[in-house]
Image (cartoon, rainbow, N blue to C red; front, side, top):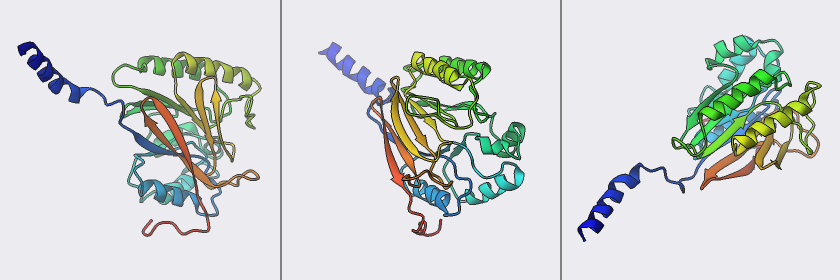
Length: 261
């Protein structure tokens, strides 16, 4: 009896400190808000603000062109958003702006950086010039190696970038001539490091596929002109029980945003 009582006391003290595998949380992800003549991006901000989503990840092409004047306009649009807003650099940020100016203006650690949120490690990778150069892939591999899945409370690994990889179902425009080979090298790293989710934009469409065991979501509907038969909108990503689930949330530009947004 004494041994059983001691074991129960041990579990009572220790269990609250263990990460809860069943605890679900969500975040929003969108891309390509440049040329937003329909007011889509403010509606995305309002939708995330008024939800349980804990932050918004923007996958690049904030405005057209890049540079201080355009980025000031973006900052005014997002000025009332109270949740964290993480930004990936896109190719349009380099039209009229530079990587160094982007880092200084938005006060980010770099054009490639990473952070932890709850039980996820999230990497923002710069491929804004349509390439996945060896030094960038090496940095990605080293960052993921330093945050191994299953250690220090990390249950999920997420990578976000602007250009999607080249896959059997995707052929993004504006990429370098070695991009197919670079995409294969990226997939090898993601598979080896057991990455759960890859996020991208650039293509003005919405697309989900299994890319060699990695969930790949492409979302480019935050205001830029859409491909034929595609809709404005963004994704809510839910992480729970070692499972990634996504839900597309359509934005109707003819509907007013929520009051006060």
